[in-house]
Amino acid sequence: MEEIRIPVEDQQAAMEILGRFDEHLKAIEKATGVQLLLRGGEFVLRGEPQQVKEGSEVLYRLKDAYRTYGSITMREVNQAIRAAKGAEKDKELVDEILLTTPRGKQVRPKTPGQKRYVDAIRRYDITFAIGPAGTGKTYLAVVMAVIWLRQRRISRIILTRPAVEAGEKLGFLPGRLEEKVDPYLRPLYDSLYDVLGVENTERYLERRIIEIAPLAYMRGRTLEDAFIILDEAQNTTPEQMKMFLTRLGFGSKAVITGDITQIDLPRGQESGLVVAQRILQGIEGISFQYLTGEDTIRHPLVMEIIRAYERAEAEKAKE
Image (cartoon, rainbow, N blue to C red; front, side):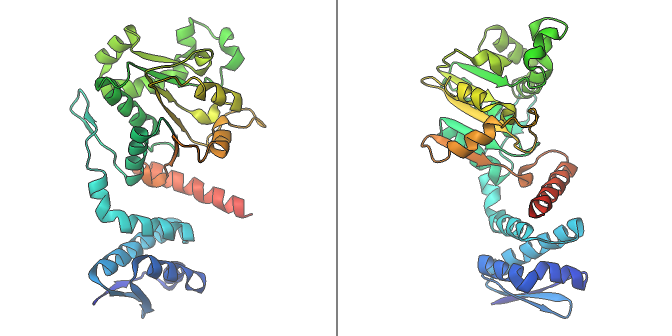
């Protein structure tokens, strides 16, 4: 039996960590098996070494959450528990190197959520990745597509996005068609340039091994022996999403990425990604992977921004 003590900054912080009617404390004890007490401005943890280790990790994470938010909800408690229980396993989960870029950068899943996403792509013919900005949804899909291409498991990569703001107004924009849609597709080029290098990407594009096109150009096609990525899928209509999903041919794999908190469709227009999430759950061969702020790999402030918006949306939902 092991015992450690963790000081708490102030009484209010202690109350937030304990939760109303000690609901947070009970959740921590149930999840970790540790015995948790508050005595004289300190949390006392008792249990087996692993239980105490996990329990203390939860408390430290909740103390950080209190300093950040000024309060703690069961959401933060559950996130802290998941993070603490997976802390040791995470090192093994994310240790796999997927590929090395031309600049020598080793690409690997950096969080358990990203690891589950990569494994889902391997296993399922259609994978939906839903989550906020910076969680690697598009980048990891491009990485997996390049791996499939190098292994000759597919013969081409197709990347597409809905050009939402353009819509029927594409014809009124200046320049050639490529110039009109380029701003909407530029993030896909950026991912390819990073993974393959500029020269390799341009060569594949010239040989049509890689194709980047607006979603509207998928209509009427059957895409066989291809790795197809639909990016920014939250900006598809239900009709566009159905059209895209029914393009899948033999020997193909599709990854659909999107953030349902950033829908740019006209007011009143339902998102095709939201509809697909509702009606396609449970179909064998289709996987839905949900990434969160915990999977964010951009600037640390991006994670804090995402958490702040998630918190505001949760409070709004309560109201």
